[in-house]
Length: 115
Image (cartoon, rainbow, N blue to C red; front, side):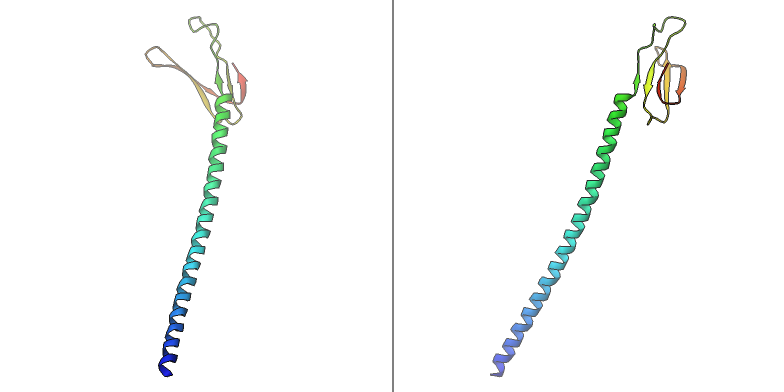
């Protein structure tokens, strides 16, 4: 009878070890799920931020404009109209000759339409 009891105790011990191993594995998997969930939330936040930045850039591209000068660049004077958004912090109008040499540079300050 003693060998049967020893065998039963050994089986019970093996079952407990398997149970503890499975429990540890479940805990590790739960932790991985939490990490994946956190990473997913972080990625979603970054995506929303990038989408917002992209939308703002698209709006800014649409709203910032440099119009055709009038009457034309061969007269003594010409008017260059432009429009910049309120978000635009600094801008320049640079005039170059046919070879690409700098003739004049104008810093644009302020917002809205101007000439």
